Length: 306
Image (cartoon, rainbow, N blue to C red):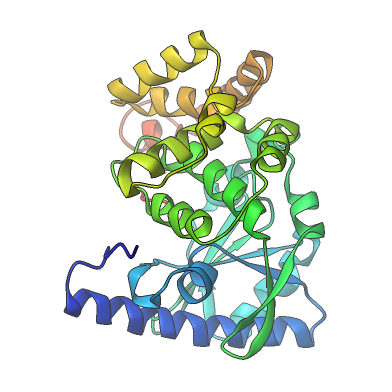
């Protein structure tokens, strides 16, 4: 089964050409990293487009994602600057997130550098998957260049977590098709994936992402998978209510926090968020105009990449 997300020949060719540019530019960066002794993993879109999807023109991207070690950030920034890339991410992105965005001079390629897969600093110490995922990395060829990425099982968990923390309230979700193609052509020991989700406390985002993927793409799962991942009645009803409302950034942050297994950790994440908002409040001169926007980890209308 092939799902034609591109919609038309013209858009398909546009996506394919853009993805080929991403592959070429990212390959140049990875080669430079290797020469400098820097490890990195290719995440999500670029790997999916050329290794998982049946046609690279079916998977649109806004940037290429790479996972690196945090201690290498200064060297990585210097390398990217030397290659003609400049950091475009807002100052708050490094403070509240775990990534930084760089764009080439001609704006033909945007690279998102991640150093933690939990996405936001306020989840650090609560969602801890990055070290284990590094250890289970697998090799693949990126345009004849040896590269590394997450294992298929870890990519399922990561795409699901990314959905739960970033795209839970979005009408469109590229990850639904990512999950379809990851799962559709592979045989899994689902008990191991469910146990891993429980180990990291991310069974709730895995449940909601798989549920949405089934609804959007027609993905079929063994009957027991969603049943085993389903949150408790109270949490499920609360999340479903918030998803239906989905009107304010406050509800978005509450939904994010509820993706964590334990309510004690939910309150911890919300407390960290409030502390960050208070710091921004203390730096701002008023609660109007720019002052209000400074309270938010990200602007309300800023679309995060998938």
